[in-house]
Length: 536
Image (tube, helix red, strand yellow):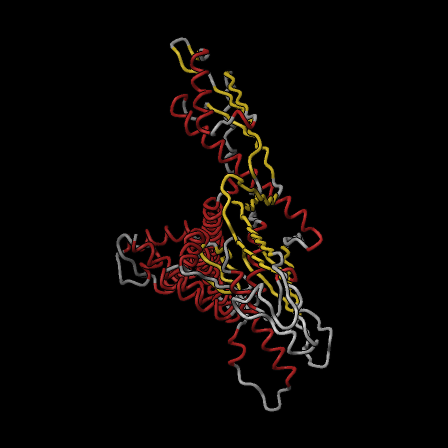
């Protein structure tokens, strides 16, 4: 086999050398291009199919992500136009899990590092203020983006310029645009918490002046005009949570007895959200007590007027022990004596003042409806007896704190549950949609192109060159036979090789001539014709 290959190679070289120089150069270029194309196809088939990992990344994020991918041994490529990172399609989920564990990508945005940049000489106060406001917006966007369900966020602040000469100052306001993950939602409480976060981070900004919307344009915060609606929504959520709490208690106490999934309960709670304040003042007359006491005593006596000349001396009061005696020139007799006593007592009664404020959201009435499935028996499902239903009814009343004074009601019914049909299995992924099919198809196409280049292009060209080389050698042998009469040959070798080997016997020369005649009859005929013409 090796001799045959060596002979073919020699024939190809001989055939190539017999071509013109221009054709030789073109043949070499075509041969090199074919080999290069085959090598490129093989390398392309070996390359994995890339899928986009993340797009529109900053240069800092691209550097951090590629560092992690290099450490994990994941092949990647970067689109320089969009800063998108593409990785091997079979390892895209693995790459995302690794990056998510490290908190990457962190999201775009510029925060306080904007202030670290060197400011040019002569920067105005307006530029400095705008740069500081932009830094605050970037920091708030980063903080909000770190919350769950939020992919990215943008914050816009409207802070009016403050002046000491303006009486009616405008209030600051803010708007937040949230980009949520696909299929995710945020509750009103989360939107309110974001509004509180922004209001607490900006001076003189109140929570009601913060507007939060999502990427669909849905308003997530409630304005002041909807205060009563917001209160009604809060009351509805409280009622819903209370009803779910009672339903959970009922199902938890009945499922161990009946079985999991065989109890369905509904609770309707009638709540009173009225806020009532009451002040009560009462007195107890049985426990009097003296608060204050006042005693007044009055004593008075009347006597005859003294004689003498009216004046200062005659108006003197009588001395002690001389009442009823003669004074001066006139006589006087004993007069009446008046005594009085007055007592004022103030009593304090036992007084009680009570201020009562009734709590909002009091339960006025509970209505409970419970459906219980049949129990399993020897012959299938068996209905519950009245005694069993009565015991279940008692358990339900104890679990919810049944109060007949409020008008609570409990209704327990036994009925067989309908068996839901099994859902249809999900359709299998079509064969063409599976990633391994495309990889295999790409390899098969690549292999087919390489085989076509080898057997459809290279092999015919090489065969043609080999035939031309063999024909050239055969012609040389015939010419040697005609000229010398003693051609060269080797046992088992081709005539072309035999002609270059060495002297042989007449029989071998004859066999060589016959072989050449069989292989190239036209050339042999041409040589014989030339002999005839030459020799006459």
